[in-house]
Each structure stands twice: as C-alpha cells, then as structure tokens.
Length: 309
Image 1: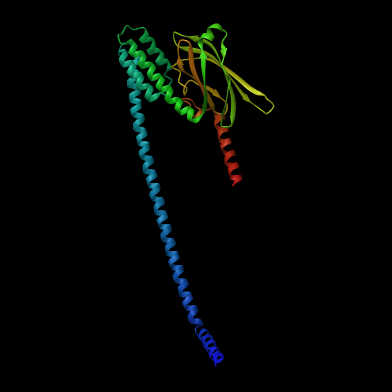
Image 2: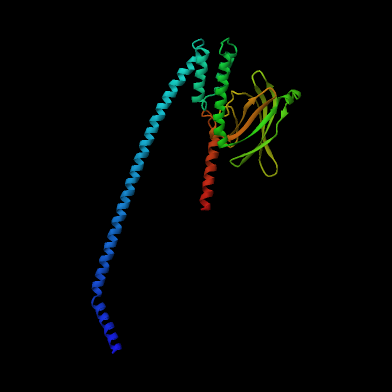
C-alpha cells in the first residue's frame, strides 16, 4: 500500500510539471524581465547621478579657479602699487627720514624677499644709519638686523624642508693665527640621489662689517672608480645675504648656499644648505637643458613605476 501511494504522488507531480512547464517558463521570463528592468533602471539612475556630480565638481573647480585668478590679479596689483610707493622713498634722496626708510625696507623685505635681491638696499640703509647723527641710530640698526635675521630664518625653513644642511663653527682666533685661511670639516650631503662633498675654507673675517670671505669647494662623484667632478667659488657672506637669492648654481637643477647665523668676537656660526633649484628665488630661472633633464628624469621614473605594476 505504501509503495503504491508513493508512486501515485510522484506520478501526479510528473503530470503537474509536464502540464505546467509553459506556465513556469512564463513566470521565469517575467521574473527575469522584472529584475533586468530594475537593474537597468538603477544603473541609469546611478549614471545620471554620477554625471551630475561630475558636472557639479567641474562647475565648482571652474568657479574656484576664476576666484583664485581674480584674487591673484588683485594681490599683484596691490603689491605693485605697494612696491612703487615704497621704492620711491629710496629713489628720492631727502624725501624720507631714516625711520620711514627703515619702515619701507621692512615692508619690502617681508613682502618681496623671495623675488628681489634686497642686499644692496640693506647695505645702503646700513651706511646711511652709520653715517647719521640720529638719536635713534642704535634702534634703527637693531631693526635692520632683526628684519634680516627674520628673512633668513623664513627662507631657511623652506630650504631645509626641501633639502639638507650641515652647520659649522668658525674659530676667529685661529683664523688670526692662520692668515692663509682655515679649512672646516668637510660635509657630504645627498639630495635626489645626487651626493656631493662640500668643503669650506674660511679665508678672511671683517669684524667691522661682520662678514666672512670663504672658498667653497664642491666635489661630485662621477663613477664607482673614485673619480670626482670638482668646482669651487669664492665669496663674502654677511647677514644681508639671503639663501634663496645668494646661492651657487649646481648641476641637476640644484643649489647650495652658505648662511651666516652669528658673528661674535671670537667665533662665527654658519650653515650650508643644499636644496632643489625650484626653491630658489623667483628671479632664478632654470636653464633650458635643466628643464629637459628634469622632464626626462620624470618620464623615466613613470616608466619604471608602470613596469613594476
């Protein structure tokens, strides 16, 4: 009896499936059509939302660019008017007091120190202060020293962040006993995979102007056999020599500068900073050959990264 009942059940299911095959197919097609329609609709909604977001971003970028462009134009016009107004006080002798000239120099320095070589102006005001009989003479000299120190500090913060450096202390008493000059400890620095050896020979010290005459020798390894490319330069450094402006141009669009930090009775403190040429003064333009070399180096790095992927 049990086996008969089981057969009847399976027979009935078979008949139902055979008779309802078309119905199941229709239901399946309807379900797939509904799901496909919803998927396409959701995809279309998502693509529309994505296009709207892209358009909104492009609009925001365009508006931001226009605003920044107008802001830069306004700032440039303001800085131009400021520069013309301040520089006139130096071009017309007797038209301004020492206090006004020092103030204008402070304004020029804080606003244009990255694009102008202000050393001649500092020296000019310094001579005028020393030659004057103004009761505030000492105060003017302190203000001049303060602004020079502050500008050097600001520039060094930028250059040290992009490059590398070393400090040296100079024994001025030892320099007296060695009029031929005293060599300082050599420093080896690496920047963008380019290693250079820097040697500084202090030749003279002018205590009246608080300046040092140095000879800078730079050796760059050329191969693994110990061959070097050597170059040297001599110059005076003082508190009015700013590293973004007063620097030595090197190969591979790089620069180095020697900065005077302190000048005491028996010693002086200097820093050599080695940095990319792109951080030099705005008036320092790279040579065409250096631009081509940088582009080739960038393309080579991109190709290497692409090959690694």
